[in-house]
Image (cartoon, rainbow, N blue to C red; front, side, top):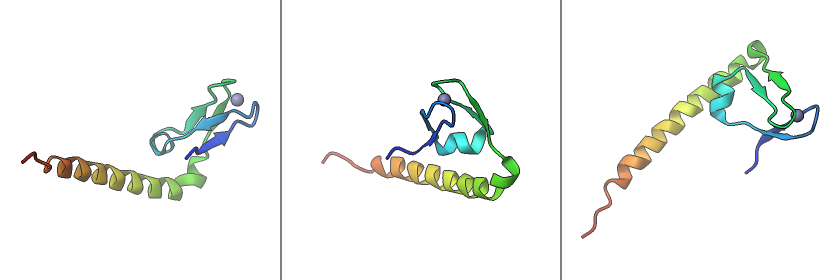
Length: 74
Ligand SMILES: [Zn+2]
């Protein structure tokens, strides 16, 4: 799954993680160095949804890790 944002200047696919979307309001194209700033006000609701998702996702990861500890060799 390759999700990303096409740089409007050079067309480079800028990889975006949920972490980046939630924590940073600006990103840089690693090809041409263009700075892209997110419209925080317009994105507020989506960001909140992503934050919730991020929290849940980390929860699930924790649960997955803890259940893996239940595997034992007999
Ligand atoms: Zn670029």
